[in-house]
Length: 165
Image (cartoon, rainbow, N blue to C red; front, side, top):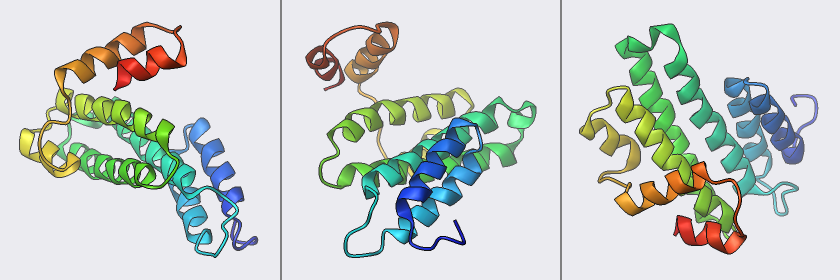
């Protein structure tokens, strides 16, 4: 990317490919460069999509770190909290841009997943409040609907939307 300045679409494509191969830290870097390249009058890549891909990379990094054998170490957990905070910020930023209905629906699900995995790994309420902005974002009906979605692969678009609202 260094040789091709102002190529946000290339950065987005590269970030997506790197995430797909488990190279999440590199995907974060590529998406950051793509975001930087969108600082122009008519960017060639959708900024919400870049933020979404970047949030996914941070999200995946949290899960990757917690699967490592040394995940009991407080330094790793602290790093995961910082990475999760970045994922949350990027998910929220992607959803704040116009025409991001699908991202808005999916971000609710991903935020529930992130919060759940952090809780399972010992994150305290005050730490979760710092990461997610205070309060419990998970209403029981949201968790129930998400679990229903995860256990069911079929359904119409309307049924899926109804279960996630």
